[in-house]
Image (tube, rainbow, N blue to C red; front, side, top):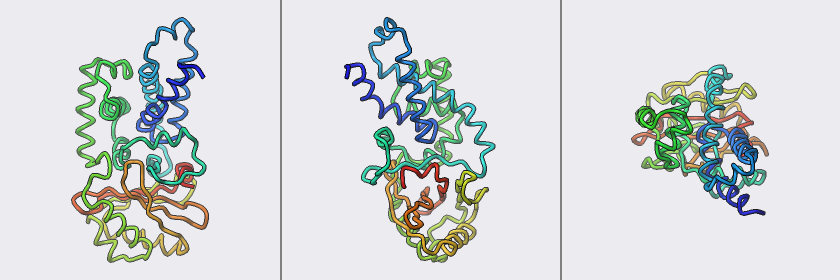
Amino acid sequence: MTAELLDIDSERPRLLGLAYQMLGTVADAEDAVQEAVSRFYALPEQERATVHRPGAWLMRTTGRVALDVLKPAHRKRELYVGEWLPEPIPGRGEELDDASPESYAVLQTEVSYGLMVVLERLSPAERAVFVLRESFGLGFSEISEVVLRSPGACRQLASEARKKIQAGKATRGSEEDGHTDLVRAFAQACATGDIAELTRLLDPSVELRSDGGGIVSAARRPVITAENVAKMLVGLRQKFPEAGVELVTLAGGEQGALFRLGEEVGGLLACGVVEGAIEQVWIMRNPEKLRLWQ
């Protein structure tokens, strides 16, 4: 293996992390990185020899590829059947028998699932700038080469993105005090169908969103208020009394709950916690976004 190939392989985790944070699914991230690597090797040999930092070149190119994919994807998600949620990624320590080495690389991200959800509120350009700046530390001059805007415009995009992120109350990991204990109690209440305990743990204005992708049943619109969310979760328990519930760790370090129907994964639940109460509940049921958990 050449030094050039070794250098590219060492950069793959960062490239996949970038593409995942921009696109929200592992499959799209892998495709974007593969396209960037293909473009690198498509360069004339003499031109490729002038690239002294292949990692930096690939980072910029992966960002551009992901941005090009995100622009039409942003519009397509408006036509998605039901709610579109990002693919939840297993954290360190979770067993992933069928995952590819490339998929494991994505686990290096320390971005919480809640932040991944809030990133969907950003425009494609805002998302690209925010991820490149906040997660990967690129300067605005380098970011400008990705989004094809001036450094000043990129700085303004970063400011707007941060405002939207702060409004979404997302953390970059399991930073919220009591998050783990709340999720554990919540998972237990879901497993037993304890509607009173569920209601107690939920913020009165909690919002639940679920993603079935039009493949399996899921609420197509957000469910709002603690009473309605608790009733829905108890109803799901009654519909699937045989489902097993186990606590798992997501990539950002926060706890989630995995629902198993026999040998199959039926869904994954994650929560957004603010000031000691569960404000957001996200349920992934789309089997295409649960492959890493099977």
